[in-house]
Length: 465
Ligand SMILES: Nc1ncnc2c1ncn2[C@@H]1O[C@H](COP(=O)(O)OP(=O)(O)OP(=O)(O)O)[C@@H](O)[C@H]1O
Ligand SMILES: [Mg+2]
Image (cartoon, rainbow, N blue to C red; front, side):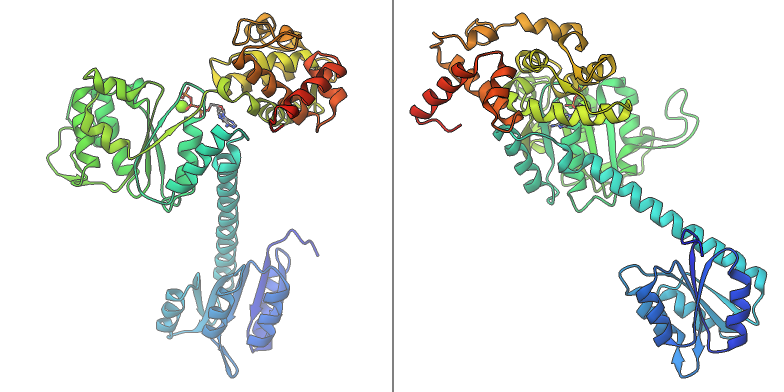
């Protein structure tokens, strides 16, 4: 029997019905039969049954009781009830208790076949939706915000803590630091995760279009408004609205936004006079300093306070360079797979460059750089030459203190910040090589002896490595 065929369990106390249904279905489905609750439960507990079709009367047993028990299983089948003509009330009762549909006896076999096909299709859709949800979770859950630096851990802790509440969240951070990723994670970890996550890119729209995007409009509200349009606040009701680049919204939309997120929770469609209410959680993001815009009178302070109930700052990548090795490995794995290449490594100077570059485009830029490297690489390693030109030029870049990376490991480095940078680079190198000093030294482009000495100095100074 083909195990990929959908599975059907037929339950009836009359042998000729069981046999008839089995003959009808066995070509297309993997069929099982049972004559009472006990027999049916035996099958259900042993086999993953997609659809169960059961008679209401099973000798002394009750088909309704069987359905109730089946639906409580960890992987319940879709249940169809067979009833005698004239007992439709019972069938309706069965559906109220979770049965998918019913057929009346005497059976119309075409109808049974159609009903089963429909149930199987609906089962398939359920499964597909579940997989889709899982993929979304994987994409936007916390596990996708990669990094092990204390700065990032602090962000993850905040996300975990505030997600279950309904508090509005303001996320600040430079471009490419993962603001949208964080917003998704908050929604997915919240009680609203079954409802929609709706994104509005505020900077992309003119003030008038933004207002209609957010609140919708009535037919004829303005030239070109041929149809009524439902806005994002209506669409996202019960869910989360992500307002990206909130710093860009104009004064009049700010007022309307304030009203919909105040106690009133009220708004009107553009050109409409019906007052609507929305239950949404707002997550706003900006790569500007919103507080400064408030001080300059460009952003309403009352709106700012409402949005800023919880504040998250995404740290720029250059301030958490210890996250680079892990991010690099993750992106390498991803892009090697996508490009159907074996898992590539990086040469020591390529890795060094990635650690030295200051990443104005943050994680997004790093991701693109790795993709570039994977595509360009010819051998088993990504070399300096395979990296994007602007990144590559960082080889000659200077570290804080005006010293080149090579010199940073020289004998006479005394500046404090330089000391910190050096320590960080050493820790990264050790982390990526699992503590192998020879390999770490090679990655850093210094001798094994120098690295040894540095580590001993740090240990002597009581620093944790
Ligand atoms: N910590 C991280 N771990 C893994 N991937 C990340 C991380 N941070 C950002 N990314 C990736 O970098 C890219 C940019 O992230 P995102 O769109 O969330 O940034 P942003 O802050 O919203 O940027 P912008 O201000 O330009 O809109 C995405 O591909 C995202 O998956
Ligand atoms: Mg973004």
